Every structure is written in structure tokens, then in C-alpha cells.
Amino acid sequence: MTALLILFLTAIAVLFAGLTKRSLLQPLSLFGTLLALGATGYDLFGPGFGWGMEYASMFRFMPFAHAFSGVAILATVLIIILSGWGFRNLNSTLGDHYGLILFSLTGALILFSFTNLTMLFLGIEILSIPLYVLAGSRRDDLTSNEAALKYFLMGSFATGILLFGMALIYGATASFDLGTISRVIGNGDQMPGMLKVGILIMIMGLSFKVSAVPFHFWAPDVYQGSPNLITAFMATVVKTAGFAAFYRLFAIAFPGAEGFWSVPVALVAALTMTVANITAIFQQDFKRMMAYSSISHAGYLLLAVLAIGTEGADRALLFYTLTYSLATICAFGAFIIVAEQTGNSSFEAFNGLGKKQPLVALVLTLSMLSLAGIPPLAGFFGKYFLFTAAFAKYPWLIVLAVINSAISIYYYFKIIIAMYFNREDSQEASLEIPAGVRLAVLVGLALIAWLTLAPGSVYGLI
Image 1: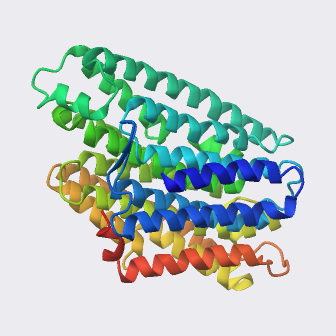
Image 2: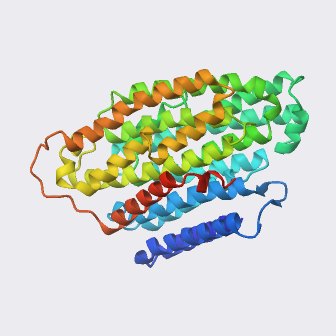
Image 3: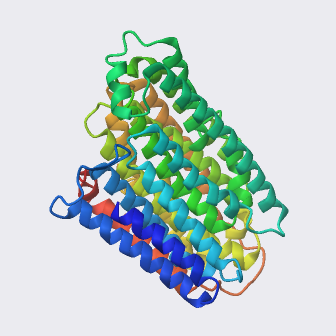
């Protein structure tokens, strides 16, 4: 709760500061997020302060909530550091950008701690509404306008589906409280049809939010059309929040109905990882490739939901979202350097980058290898923990996930091959590496190295 209040107050302060003190916006946003990260760390590692605190039967702050809050806030800190370069051309709207990002992060923190369906709805809306605006913040860019419109329409559609599912669940259980719903379901032997339909509709709505197949069609266009840093925020913070909410809802409210909902979730997971990886092979634009990469990782992350009740499922989800977020932000940091100085986001923009700017090429190489799950990088341990947690229940799905991981190596390596083996088309000067971008990607790489060398330091947090 402390971190949530800090972020909310910081967002308000940033909006007011944007009216007069533009130079203070990034430092103020960074200070607020670092303070919130410190508060989260104290709650997680301190003498039990804040553990189990409950507010009006709406929130419950346990290690799960604190740990995932730390992942989301850390990702936002790195994005704010990157924003010194990524937002450099913004003038009157700079304060709006920082404020909306912080409000969206506040919604993510609600999704890590809700114990009531009304707070799930509120958290999703606070997370999503600022991003509808940010996706279309480049008002003179038609692709950005298209991204905002598609995101808004599909997001509104998903929200309507979620509300319909919540209404059916309330009609069947007479409660929005997750614990009460779980007690009504019991062992799931006598679930009414209304409740079953409500659970299926909730799966559909949440699948829209996490861009799982077949509810993923909005993601590639939105990722491609949105500003680069907003795309990075969607791919990391929004993805983390969506899956934490997915896991929390089904682990607390629907564990007794697992025999019913596990089959559709398993089918969605199988479709998601397979369709996304195959489609990613044919992409030639970096952001569209990362969009399909993000969708494929949604398929892997659904394995954690399927592993509910298995020892280590929540820890595997935490570790995977952290390693995925760090690698994705590092990849976007390198991409921003290339795309915003060459004006090209296709794979051709990376030709010869290994010679022209070795540091940027190294950052992107390590990011791609980690996302692919190549040992011994942290991404490999993320997949190992996740696959191990789900293997006892779904061995066939883990075999499919391993095959899909092998497929993903192909399109990740297309970037690496372009950087080191393809000739650059023009003899341009070496790319400039802004100090903020350098700091963010080096911090990200340092954290990936730490997770590679000591994966148990995070895996054992919750």
C-alpha cells in the first residue's frame, strides 16, 4: 500500500510540475518510482512489515504482491531512465506522458494485491486507460492513431467481456470476494452452469488483456504503432500485471474448479505459443517481431496458471516475468538507439551493427539469447523453472513448449546474424549512445547477469 500511495502522489505531482518545470519531470518521476521500489523492498525484506495487511476486504498485501510490485516498478524505473532520450522531442505533453505512465503503474500494483472482483476491474481500467492515450500520443503519425484506436476498441471489448463474466460469477455465488467464491465452489463437483460460463468468459477477457491466441490480433499493430517506450512498457509492465492478475484470480477464487478451466487454458496456451512463434518467423520489422515474441511468451506464462497448486508455480511466474522484462527493456533500449537515429525499424537497420557500435550489438545479442532461453543466461532458468512446475500435470504441453522455444531461436537469431554477418547498406557514422540509454541497458544487463549467476536469490522470494 505504501508503494501504491507513493506512485499515486508522484503522478499527481508530475502533472502539476509539467505546467511549469519541464526539467524536473524525469528526475521527479525517477525519484518517486525509486522511493516506491524502496518501500516495496522494505515490505518484502523487512521485519514482516506489511505482510498480510488487508484493506476493507479489497486488498491483501502478501509477499506475492510485494515481489511482483518490485518487478513492475523496476521495469518502470528503467523505462523512465530511457525516457530522457525517448521523450526528448516532447514539449507541452511531457508531463502528461510521465503522469500517465505512473497512473498506469498504480493500476498494475492493484492487480498484484486484489481480493475482490471489483478491484480486479478497477485495476485493469487504471492500468489500461492511460495506455489508450499514450499509444496515440504521436498525433501526427497515422500508425500511432491507428494503434490507439485499435487498443481502445479491443480493450473496451475485453472489459465488457470481463464485466459480463463477473456478473455471471456474482449471480452464481452472490459475492465478488475471491475467498467467498472459492468456498462456494468447494471442490467443483456441483458447479452451476452460470458459474461455468462465467469462468469461461473471464478466461476470454483476461486472454484479451494478455494478448493470448486467438485474442491477440490487436497486439502487433498496437506494438508497432505506439511510441517505442510505450511499447516497451506494454510488453513488460502490462504483461507482468496481466499474468499476475490471471494467476491470482484462479489460484484464490477457482482452485476447486481446476478440472473445468484447465482444459481451455491449456488449449489457449498451446495455440498461443505455436501460432505466435510461427508467425514471428515471417516478420521483417523489429517491433512486430517483438510483438509476436511477447505473444509467444504469453503462451509460456500460461503454464504457471496451469501449474496452480504445484510447488514453485508462483515463484516460477515471478522469475520468468522478471527475466523477460529485463531482456525486453534492454532489447528496446538498443532498438531505440538504432531506430531513432536511422529512422528504420526493419531488420536491415541492424546490418553491420556489430562493427559500427559493438556495445549496442552486445546488448541486443544478450537480450535475444535470454529471450530465446539459451543457457546459461537467466532466460533459460526462467523457462526451466516454469516448465518444471507444469511438467507433472501437462507433460505434452511442456514438450510443445520446448519445440516452440527451439522455433523461436530462428527469429531471434535473425537479428544477431544481421548485426554480425550482414553488410551495412550505408557508411554512416557510429551511432550515438545517450548516457541515459547506456545506464538503463547496463543496469538491465547487470541484473540479467546476477539472475544468471544466482537465480535462487529471486526464485526463493515468495
